[in-house]
Every structure is written in structure tokens, then in C-alpha cells.
Length: 288
Image 1 (cartoon, rainbow, N blue to C red):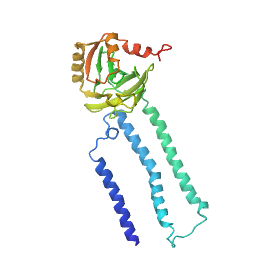
Image 2 (image 1 turned 30 degrees about the vertical axis):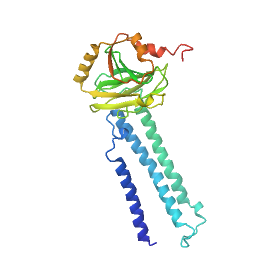
Image 3 (image 1 turned 90 degrees about the vertical axis):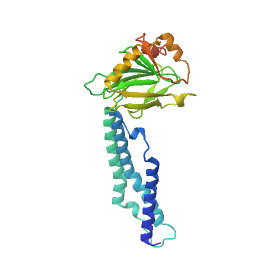
Image 4 (image 1 turned 180 degrees about the vertical axis):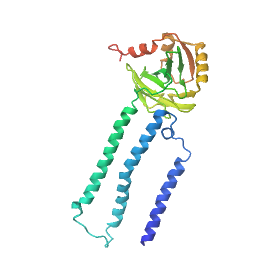
């Protein structure tokens, strides 16, 4: 086969693979690649940088694999036999030096990012954070606004461009709280209170879910994070404060029972320390 023919076939194969990926991904709204929040933006950039650095090693290796397999095939008598290549200092320097440099760069980036994107780290803002306590139930989510004396089921709402301080626990099997367009996931566990700081840069409805399998109703254990203007958020809080249903220990005991009903509901909160009570529920010996 003539050399020009090989080049044409290889080019067609590369263009064909590129076309397939473009066809599959064109128009797809991949949440982690289309972020709408301050933290998710930085996590997207971190993934892209890590992927590019990783591919700078992986792609040449795969290309050389096919090139060497073709060049040194059994029937090619023109390939030059070079049994002393294992002692070539230039090649040794390249295949040890390049991965060392890439791993060093990735290590520095990972160290900086692990501090910058620490979910416990408060976000810099002139606005006061909205405090929301999250309880993973079996199989739905309860959101408590202790400062506003309200609560909501299967729907969380907060204003745009405002930091949100999530406190997260579970009153069910271990779960994972995740709003993909706004940031990474944090585990929800009984007897523990974890934290996650997020901020949305655009208004909209963003799907949230559990990223940890927790039983029969896990697949539908979803909620909607509604990011609204300050005025809309104030109106929603006023509506919640006039809700007919009250969230107290008695009401909570009912919604804590296993259920696949994820219909959004609003409550007035009559027990401010309800979240702490849920966390402490599993602190006594024998209850965990």
C-alpha cells in the first residue's frame, strides 16, 4: 500500500471518529460541562485541564501502538532491526521525564484545588449566605430554613448570586447530595452533619439527586433546585410562612417513613432545633 494511501485512510478514520463524537454529543446538555455556579465553573475547568494533561500522554501512546504494530509487522522486511534501543538515553528521558512533569503539574493543581474547592470553605461575597439544612430521607429530601422558620419537601429554593450554606445529614441509609450544575456531591450520613457551600450564577431550575444508591426508591429520589431573584425568593418565603402544614416532630415522623411520593410541599417550621434532633437521634448507643 502506498504511503499516500495510508495517510488518507488514517485521516478519514480520525475525521470519522471525530464526527461520531460530535454527532453523539452535539446539543447534549451535560451538566458538569455546562455549569451554572461558581464552584461548578472551577470544577469544570479542573476536569478539562486534567483531561488535556492526561491525554497528552495517552494519545501518543495509542498512536505509537498502532504505528509500531504496523511498521514492525511480520511481513515488513523494510523495518530496521534496532536491538540496542533499550539503552537510548533520549528515549529513556522522554518516557520517564514527560510523565514525571505531568504528574508534578497535576499534583500542584490538585493540592491548590483541594483547598480552593473545599466544600466546608465559605464563599467570598458581600451578601449574607442562605442557611439550608438538608435531610436525606428514604427516598426524598427535606430542606429546613432555620433562619426563616420554614421547610420544604423535594424542592429547594434560593436567590441567584448569593452563597448558600448547606448543612447535610441523613435519617435513612447513606446518601449523597448533588446538584450537578452547581457543584460536586457531598455525602449525607446518619449521626453526622456535613457541609457544602455553593452559589448559582444564573437563575433557573436545576435538577438535584442522590449520587449514592440507597434502595428501592433511589432512582426517583430527586429534587429541583430553583434559583430565583431576591424578590421572588422573598415572596416564596412569605408563602411558606403562611403554609397550612406545620413541620414539627409529629409531622416529621410521618414524612420520615419510607415513601416514593416526591411531591413538593411547604411547611412552617415550629421546632427550630429539628435538624439537631435528627442528627442526635443516632448518637445514642444502639440507635445507629
